[in-house]
Structure formats: structure tokens, C-alpha cells
Amino acid sequence: MTNLELQKMANEVRKGIVTGVHAAKAGHPGGSLSAADIYTYLYFEEMNIDPKDPKKADRDRFVLSKGHTAPGLYSTLANRGYFPVEDLVTLRKLGSYLQGHPCMQHVPGVDMSSGSLGQGISVACGIALGAKMSNADYRVYTLLGDGEIEEGQVWEASMFAGHRKLDNLCVIVDNNGLQIDGKIEDVCSPYPIDKKFEAFNFHVINLADAHDFDQIRAAFKEARETKGMPTAIIAHSLKGKGVSFMEGSVDWHGKAPNDEEYAVAMADLEKIAQQLA
Image 1 (cartoon, helix red, strand yellow):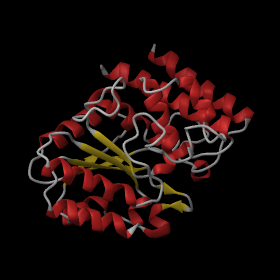
Image 2 (image 1 turned 90 degrees about the vertical axis):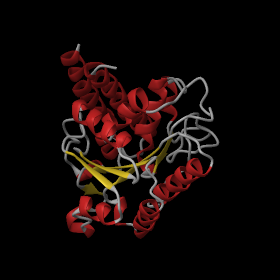
Image 3 (image 1 turned 45 degrees about the vertical axis):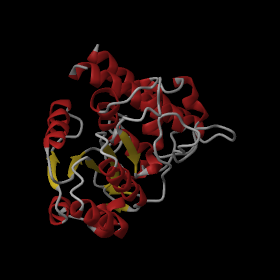
Image 4 (image 1 turned 90 degrees about the horizontal axis):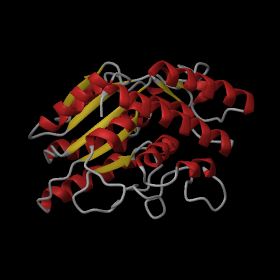
């Protein structure tokens, strides 16, 4: 896809995020919106996947380590054709397969159930090692939150990945600078993130603008070409990206817009769509 096509699709993904969270009256819009461009690039450009055959053996795998941003993953999967976009309004509803955290048993395209912060990267390491042991050539991608990397398990997994030279593993940190209790630097600073991953024998890519598809494309190309060590992409993003009153606001980490706010948010995204037309 061209960058313009990717921008348009990412905007549709954002519409799905806002629509789902509004319908649920609960959820995590801020971190879903900040990662929407990464989600879009992975599923529409980067990964070897087939919505018509979600379990094909040689597919690339994705583990959403920051599982609470499931609205972003669901909207991406729906727009990619794994299930109907119309189902996004059932988010978190009783009986819906689209629950607050992704479940691999019920959601087409989900490779790992996740939600407990810190655990997803460990599973991704196991999947990547499994590929190595079976001489499979698929790649494994995992998306972490920058608040999530305050969890010790993240660094145990990173030590393992570096030691095992898992060059089929790509860790992405959505570095939007905010977590549920405020700025990550105030809660329990994980900075410098890049130096920490380097210390665990990762090749590190600092993605200065995680909403610029030229930069995103270059980062994933570099990751694919890196041999002998895993890659960490530190993706500098804006929490709530695309919705005026959510951008850069910690208040929108984990709450849903009311009807009035929903109308403003969708108008913001529709304005972006018109600019991209």
C-alpha cells in the first residue's frame, strides 16, 4: 500500500476504535489511538498473513502485550477482513467475542490471549524460539506499552531474547509517555529505553514519529534485515492521536467518550478523512 492508502486505513482504524469504546461505555482509547498507525502498517503491509486462513502455518505472529488496547487490534483485524467491522460495536458486551482483552480461542486473527502486563513479550519470545527450533521462517511481532515496560518480566524476557539471538523477534514499544497514573517519567521512569534494550543485546531503532509511514516503513525494513539479534523499535507516539480532546491527555487512558464527545471525535476523524481524500 502507498503511504496515502495507509494513512486512510489508519484513520478508519481510529474510527473503529472510537466507535467500539463508545458503544461499550468502557475501554482504552488513548493507547489504541497512539498505536493505530503501527497496527495498520503491520497488518496491511508488513506481516505475512491471510484473513481467509487465519491459522496458516507460515503466517507471521503478533502478540499484543499491552492487551488493554484491544480496541485498536480489533478495529485493525476487522478492517483487514478477519471479521465484520459492524461487530466492533459489540465490544465488551455480554456474549460478544470481542472482550476487553484479546482471546485467541474466540477472535479470528488473534495469536495469543493477553492482558496481564509484561507477559506478552515472554510468550512472543517462546513463539520466536519455537520457530527457530522447527526451522520455520515466520517472524514474531509484539507491541508493548511504555508503562508496561516497568514490569520486571519484560526484562527477563529481553535477556532471554538477546541471549538466544532471536532475530525473528521484533519488539515494538508504543512510547506515548503516559500511563494510567500520569507521565511514565513520574510514575516509575523506564528511561533511557533504548539503552536498556541495547544492554540486553537488542538492535534498537528509535522511531522518531510513529505516525509517519515513511519512518515506520524504514524501521520495519531495518528490523527485517537485522541478523543475529532481536530488534526493539522505540516508537515515539502521541496518546489519543487523531482525536482533538484526547491527544496528549492521560485522562483518556481508560475511559469512554459520552455521546457528545463521540460526535466530536468522529467529526475530527472525518475531517482527517476529507483532508486525505
